[in-house]
Length: 150
Image (cartoon, rainbow, N blue to C red; front, top):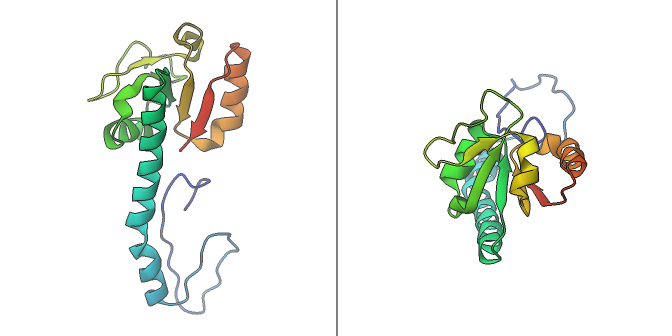
């Protein structure tokens, strides 16, 4: 897992090779690695269910929800998580994306300033690395939505 848990990677080394220090799990044999990999589908299913629950809760409460990030993670989230149709807008800082729509799901892509008009109750941040920065930026707009990151 790299880039603060944003990407999955596998790194292999030859026996006896020096390995850089890391917080990630280290596996000494293939059986141990295979057990870890075998648990991946269950971990993904659990994460998907968590997001479905958030989306269902927001929808049942009539909350306005936006995502922050209209790139590949945003597209994957909107097309891959059941219930994501409750999300009304995608926010992106790239002005060349504003006024366009997310592929397949159709949410309008807006700039951060437009959040003042949309007034979302919740924002799903596609890249957790930017969560503190986005929390401050949204606060400067006079908004205080629930912020959750992938």
